[in-house]
Image (cartoon, rainbow, N blue to C red; front, top):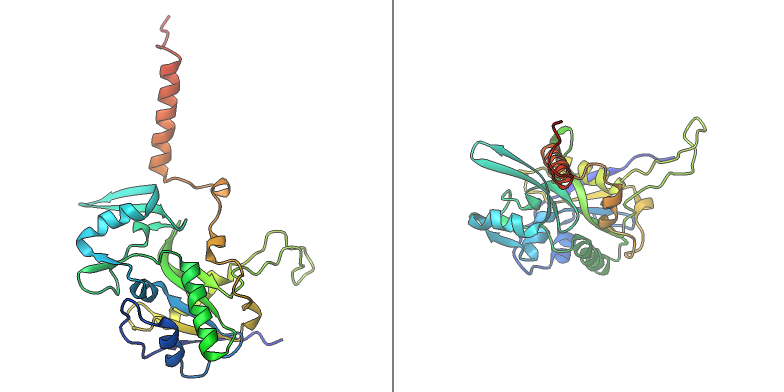
Amino acid sequence: MDVRYSIEGVEGLPEIGEGVDLAALVAGAVVEPLADGDILVVTSKIISKAEGRVVRAEDREQAITDETVRVVATRQTGDAVTRIVENRLGIIGAAAGVDASNAPDGTVLLLPVDPDASARALATGIRSLTGARVGVIVSDTLGRPWREGQTDIAIGAAGVHVFEDLRGRADASGKALAVTMPCVADELAGAAELVKGKAAGVPVAVVRGLGQLVGDLDLPGARSIVRPPDRDMFRQGAEEAYEDGYRAGFDEAQAEGPLRTE
């Protein structure tokens, strides 16, 4: 069995402006022609630029508030407050994904309105232009709980199996796999970042050799990766959970009436 795959960055893309035809730009910039089973990993920022998801830098804090569905945790560091929030896409991270890196001067970028739909439109366009049955992953950079540093994850996907469901199969020693379901979309997003980089000006990478992961455009997108609230064991930051527990205990004590001293 061939277990090799390759990832190459797509160089030569121009600065992306609102309304550009990303499918044509990407398809035209790939050096080796795209083939069935190739997967394009596209940095969310160029999609945000193409979709006009740009706001003035001085409006950043309000933009974070507007993109926030739920505050998970906050931390004061000097004069700055870091907000870990759930955004309208269900993704939990710092600043709701509002980011100044690789944005035009004086502006910040918001995440795409619907990254799965953006991935689907891009995959549809590239399939039409090239005749190749490709998949598309839209990636963005996030930190992780309990781990330093950041990595790229999939926030949008089309034509790609985002999970490799191994449940019910046996491992190499014959033991049944009960819960094993690698999130291959996130794994590919992180791997592709190694050739894209934050400062290299390479926002797209092509993954070749994993055609078994490519499928129809109606496959579940990256939204299916977000864990449902009823299965989330860490809904709040430590300080927020303590404050809520304290408040609930205080309210309960008040409802029971004054403490009896005799």
